[in-house]
Image (cartoon, rainbow, N blue to C red; front, side):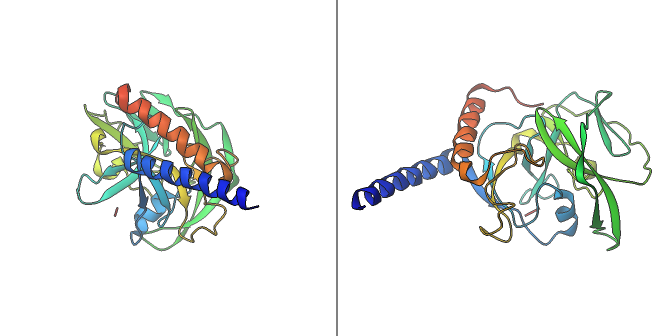
Length: 248
C-alpha cells in the first residue's frame, strides 16, 4: 500500500510539472468576464461568462476556431468569437446564415432542442431562436439564429492582416459586424474549458473540449490531460511554421 501511494505521488508530481511547463510555454488560464449582457448573449450556446478556459499563447487561429482577440475599440479588453474569414475573403449574411466567397456554410443537422428561448439583452424580452449545428474547418458547433426574416447584409472583404470574427449567437451578436475585422496578430485560439461559473462541480462544463462543441463531440472529463497534451503538440507545430489564417 505504501509503495502504491509513493507511485501515485510520483505520477501526480510529474503531471504537475508537465502542467506548469505547458502553462508557462503554451497556454494561459483566463476567466471570461461577467457584467456585459450583450457579450453574455453572444457567447451562447457554446460558452458563458465565468467559464475558465485555456487561451493559447502562440500561433494563429484556424478557420472555425474559437478565439480571444484584443478589442479594437478598447485595447485593454478582449472580445471572443469564432474565426470564420481570412484576409481577401468575402463574407455575407442572409437570414443570419454565413456565406464565404459566395459559398454557404453548411449546417448538416439541427440541434436538440431545435429552438432556444433567450432574453434580448437590449429589450429584456424573451425571443425564440433556432439552433443548428455547423461544420466549418472540420469543427462542429452549435449556432443560434432568429426565426424572423432579416435583411441581407452587404458582404465585406476582409483586409490584409485581419480576420472576421462572428458570434455563435448570430442574432444577439458582439462580433466583426459591430467592430469590423480584427487584427489577426492579437487573436489566440481557445481550445479547452476547465469548468464553468458554477465551478468544478458542474459536470456539463467541466473539462470540456471547445475545439468541437456539438453535442456528443469531444472527450470526456477523464481525458483532459490527453486534450492538453494534444493541444500543446498542435500549438508547437503551428508556432514553428503554420501560415497565418487569413470584454474583460
